[in-house]
Amino acid sequence: MTEHILCEKKGDATHITLNRADCGGLVSDPMAADLAQMIDEAAANSKYIVFGSAGDDFCLGRDMDGREPGRPKDAMDARRRSEVVFNFYGAFHRSKVPVVCAVQGRALGFGCAITSVCDITIAAESARFALPEMGHNIMPTMAMSSLIDRVGRKGVMYLTYSTEEIDAQTALAYGLVSRVVPDNKLSDQLAMVCAALDKAPMPAILSVKEYATNAITMSVSQASDFARNMHAAVNTSEGMRG
Image 1: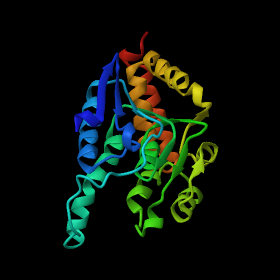
Image 2 (image 1 turned 45 degrees about the vertical axis):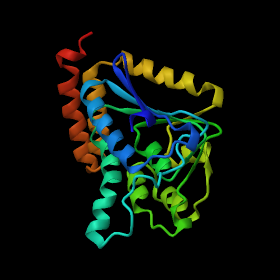
Image 3 (image 1 turned 90 degrees about the horizontal axis):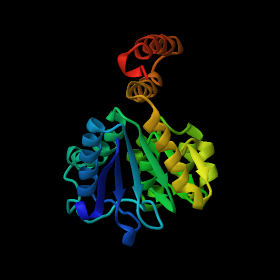
Image 4 (image 1 turned 180 degrees about the horizontal axis):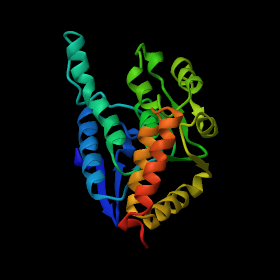
């Protein structure tokens, strides 16, 4: 599947790009498995990861090619078949370094989920987002699981039930994306974020991701104690001394 995915180390960052402009960046199950492995490997040897897509659209969803034929035999077989997608989402969560995403065009279904699980998502003004699964008689808890700690309940429920394509500003209001910029400024904005990450010390890069990942499930007092301890430990570490 390497012809459909570009993976390149640039300085301290790994850039992973969906290279399927001919079909709107569709992702097959074998591609999802390869992408998860690439993210795991990049997280071990990079300061951050940049995830993007070539072409007019970011990702129009999953590609039917490469899936196991026929219906699942039972619930356990269905669960096994879906594991490739959950493992893909998990790669973003377990990455110890941040994943930055730039979105152009449409991000639908699986594509919408990708934009959600990235740590920072920059969207072009013309970008569109949707979870169309319910319109195809698919109950989309797979996609919903990628949004559940990123997007508020109102936004998740609306995206899921309505199946409507929302614009970038609505996605920003929902918390699905981090920043919306004019289409012709998308590359510049991504470069600015990358430059900030290039400059930041590695202990801070790792610790911010660790705190954001874990503090959300803590009580306020626990999150405060966690912040207090991390602040003391990280800011006195050797790696923070410029």
